[in-house]
Image (cartoon, rainbow, N blue to C red; front, side):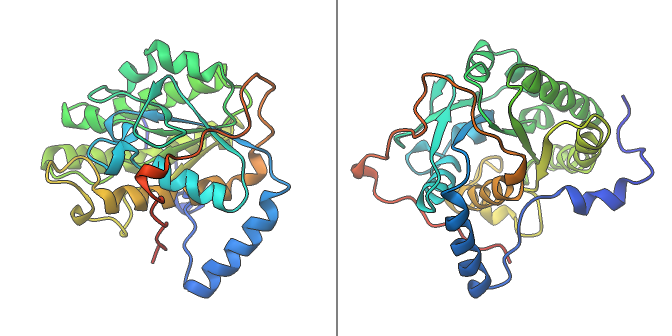
Length: 276
C-alpha cells in the first residue's frame, strides 16, 4: 500500500493526535480533579507497552523508561493499573513490558513473547516502534505498511484492546531523522484507515511535536534522556485519558487488577510535566 495519498490527509492530522495540551496550572489542576472523580468509575487498565529499546527504557533512571511515571500518575488519580508483558523491564514494581532493543517493527511482531502477552488480553496496547528501521535505512512507506500490519495483528489477538500508536521521537542521525519525519507524516494516514475506514480502536499520540528537541535525547541521539522519558510518559498518559470512552473492562483472567507497587528503594516516580 502507498501511504500519504489520501485527499483528507491534512484535515485529519489534528483530529488524530490525542495528546492533551494543558494551558496552565489551574486548568491542569481542574483536569486532575475531574480525572480523579472519573477514575472511581473507570475500568481497570491492563496495559501492554510494545516496542524496542525506548519502550524497554534504555538509559533511563532505574531502567523504567516512560512506563513508571505514566503508571504512577494513573494510579495517583485512583486507577487500577496492571502492566503486562513477557519481559521484566526496569526496577519499578509493575515492570512487565515488551521492549526488544535493536529490533525492527516486523522483528518485534514476530517475537513469541509479544503474542504470549497479547493473550493476557490487555485493554490498552501502547506501540512505539520503528526507530531501528529508520536507523537501518528502511523506507518510510514500508515502515507504515509494517506498523499497519502489526496493529492488525495486535487486534486479532487482543480483541478487547484499544491501540495507541506513537510517532517516533527525534533522532540525531540525519539520515534516520529524515526517515522518521517521513514515517511520522504517514502515520496519521495509517490510523485513519484503521479507525476511520475499518472502525478499529486505533489512535495516535505525538512524541515528535514542537515540545520535543534533541535536548530531550541522550548523547547517542536515539534514546530519550530522563527528561525526554518523562515527557513521553505525559504524552501516553494524556493519550489514555483522551480515548477513555473506548476502553472497556479487561477480559476475565487470573491476573490481578492492580500490579505490584514500586520498591521504596527507588523513591517516588517523577511528576509529569505540563505540555506548553
